[in-house]
Length: 270
Image 1 (cartoon, rainbow, N blue to C red):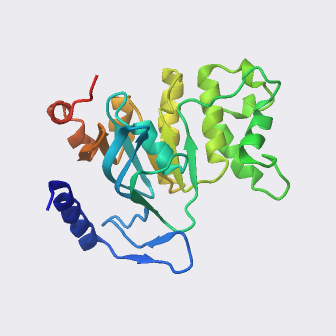
Image 2 (cartoon, rainbow, N blue to C red; image 1 turned 180 degrees about the vertical axis):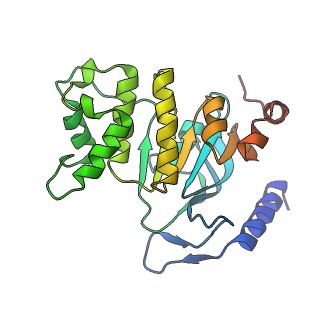
């Protein structure tokens, strides 16, 4: 038996000892009854997934889990497959192998690192939010109060009537986060969300992630090169360089010697 198959069997056995997964008949979803000791529900789990572009693999044999009320961070060098992995979990890119298991009815919002659109279009922030949501952002009968509170926390309320082309990079990033939250997700996928945000905005964003996790119970999967943010906000960290080379609490994974060892074990080509 090949080494990969042996490792996969060992991993499945360990996971089987921790959980009881039941398939739900007549549904595309899978009922996941896994619980950590903390009692947090498992939202998403990957089982040996791989994906790529053309002949080249972006990542392979990736196993990870994301729970509710938890911030999970993906770190690693450029080109390690982090963005591709998020795109696969969001259902944008297909897998080459493995599977992704999700809790039944799981609502996922994905915030890409860059969103391609013409900022010169005469569109206001509230119109943009409505377009992203697929319906009026402030529709009668909807929880307008909750939406306003969310916008106030993000510092977006004062921007609603401004055009997108007038916004700074940090302001635009806050608007994109607001658009992702407008769909009331249970799992939030964030790709470098603090890009273009100044120090004051970064501190506010840090506080927002804490509130989304602790107050609203969201699961958050975050890609970031900001190791200070990762150390401060994360409950669990995966070091990805084509494969998961290390995982655990941030105080363990982010040790200098652990990171150095991970880079040596599977250096990124080029």
